[in-house]
Amino acid sequence: MAKMTGAQCLAEMLAGYGVTHVFMVPAVLRRTFAEMERRTQIARIHTHGEKSAAYMADGYARASGRPGICMAQVIGALNLAAGLRDAYLAHSPVIAFTGGRDPKTKFRKVYQEVDDVPAFEPVTKLNATVDDVSRFPDMVRQAFRVAVSGAPGPVHLQFRGNEGQIDAEEADMEPLVEPLFSRVPPFRPEPDRAQMRAALELLQQAERPVIVAGGGVRASGGGRALTALAERLQVPVATSLNGKDSIPGTHPLSVGVVGTYSRESANRVVAQADLVCFVGTEAGGMTTHFWAVPKIGAKAVQIDIEAEALGRNYPLQAAVLGDARTTLERMLEAADAASAAKRKPWIATARGICAEWREKYTSQLESSAVPMRPERLVAELTQRAPDDALVVVDTGHAGMWMGGMFDLRTPKQNYMRSAGHLGWAFPAGLGAKCATPDRPVVVFTGDAGLWYHIGELETAVRWGINTVVVVNNNGGGNQSKRGFDRAYGGEQTQKARELWTYKMVNFAKIAEDIGALGIRVEKPNDIGPAIERAVAANRPAVVDVVTDIEALAPTAVG
Ligand SMILES: Cc1ncc(C[n+]2csc(CCOP(=O)(O)OP(=O)(O)O)c2C)c(N)n1
Ligand SMILES: [Mg+2]
Image (cartoon, rainbow, N blue to C red):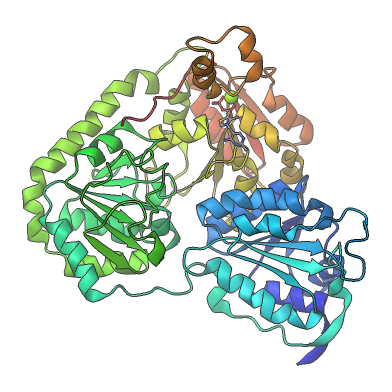
């Protein structure tokens, strides 16, 4: 134990946990920032908003498996809480620090203050206050422990003082660090042998099984074990959006993303399966097209690290509690390859369904139309994304186009997606690049998505965060078009377009103005070279691709 300030303790602990960047809007924990400069190499990225700071921390966390740290003073706390929502939905280990009320002044209408703590409740696994400086070490350790354990997720610590001035106080403390909790997963629980065998037997007996792999496979680094098991037993693999990078899209057993933002082939294969094996997925609404694919009552087995996920949405023939990678490895060790032969016809059927999907969409994927088809843009990205690219995708149409039509070509490529919040991808892509500076990071977003946090282009330039942003720019949020047609009882009025269209803007020009590389693309043959140039530039870059505002992504097959 040594007498030290909270600021010294916190700076040393963050460095000890391997934190390389923190994301925030000042002013919070100011003395901690001074100590970071004195004692650590931590980069202190100040952003243009607390929500984007949270998204950057989220992108950092999902890209690296290490907790992402974001911060706000009391007045920015709810902006930060709003930004934890996506991390909560996607099980991303984000740790948020805020300033908070001082017992000496609370309830006296102190400047900028409300009780922020309740607002963090629905978006965190742990939501706690640090009221005495001597609690810094144990509370920070608990924050890391909770964020990365089990199904990971956000944590909030509120530090006393609107700017967390408690960090100036002294106590006898030891800045003890537990490296075990510096990344996901700290533990790899072994499955119960009998339960694992029961699931395996069912998979081996099935004639038309399918595996649905989710974000839990990605978090446990289970992609290789998943692919090996699928190959050994000859089982097609569909994924959730969060699990898209657990098997390359070009693998012969991959049938695509299943659910609502999906690929028709995946939905058809899952709907025809005689057994669905869920691995590391909550089998939530998005992954099952609101429990229509497969239908409730379909024969199912499930593997998850959280007991409460097992059977929540589908009654199970076998439930296996365990780490996804470990469980898949145990199944692989025990798998009977001879059982694969009977699934030859099923594999042929699944391949046929995939071929039908490709044939159906070839004309769009190869379209030379102007204004361009988004399908062509996505096909170009499949071909041009570097072999080790980390692709970060927004929601809405971006999630539909990319989830359904983009393919990862190698196991070294990764994919992360907004769990529902428009505007997440750009800041998340900046955070991801901070976490993995040696990898090309490519963001895919619509124009409405980019507008949300476009100010962070300045952050990217200021810090040299060389993320490439590909904008599917149609001058509006045209995913809303169908919804407004329905709302108007058929076809919307011309005036209704004011509800979802914007001024068509040249984002490449804005990027250039701020000091990034900007490339405007108006012809399909120019997309590929523009992406390659942007990736090679090693600068923050925006590839602004003008596409057809009437183009709508195919809806899910039920
Ligand atoms: C925070 C948030 N607010 C609203 C929405 C609803 N929403 C989904 S897609 C979308 C428009 C998307 O526009 P854009 O990014 O330009 O993509 P496009 O549909 O034009 O391809 C909206 C408003 C959302 N997903 N998240
Ligand atoms: Mg748009």
